[in-house]
Length: 56
Image 1 (cartoon, rainbow, N blue to C red):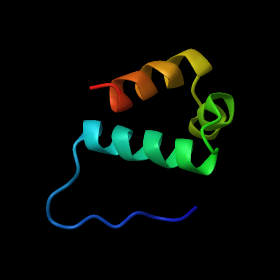
Image 2 (image 1 turned 180 degrees about the vertical axis):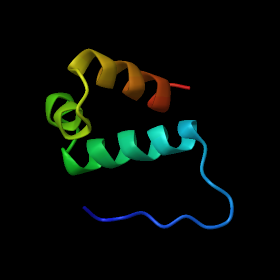
Image 3 (image 1 turned 90 degrees about the vertical axis):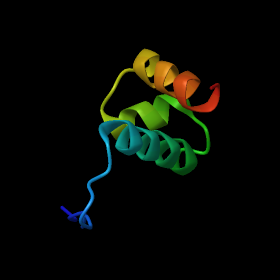
Image 4 (image 1 turned 60 degrees about the vertical axis):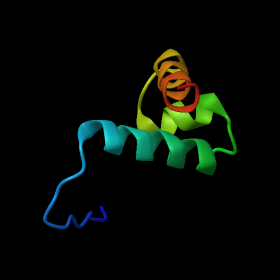
């Protein structure tokens, strides 16, 4: 498993969630089911995260 390297200041949980949601959506070409599967969450949870992230 690849490791992440952090600099002195750690990202917040919100920042990490945002990065993961955006990356999963990018890798899945916008497919919510596929993105949710990559993150190990339900489609409903992914939809909530996407709505939170992209509709602020």
